[in-house]
Length: 132
Image 1 (tube, rainbow, N blue to C red):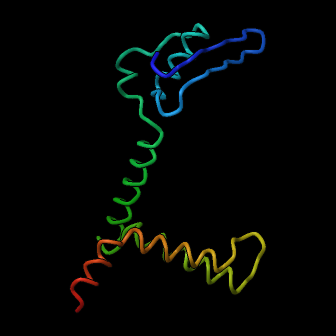
Image 2: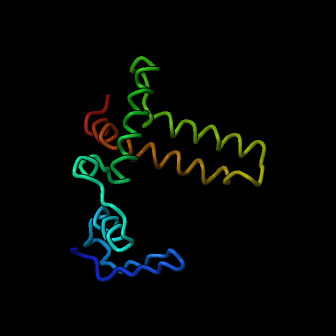
Image 3: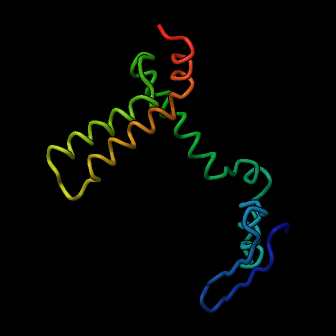
């Protein structure tokens, strides 16, 4: 398998050691290499086709949550705006209460601003190019 250097299986401990080239191997190839080495049945082609990369699953979940947020707010808000607002609220709470369990208020405020600015970069650039 491309990118997989070696796969070792210790039946006594049930451990599997996989040596691979980071970035050069498909995660599904790693799973297949472990399954073959451990003597497990490989999934059929239909299951393989449905297998999703973790990053794609996370992106899909975030998009679904964003769509639900838009629907619940009647299209007035999305996560690009609500997440920084929530972080700003936490910053204010952290400033007032000052609990050690929360991140410092100034860190929360910085990240809220930074995230908002990053997620709204195109709108900010448009406003700078065409001031009202």
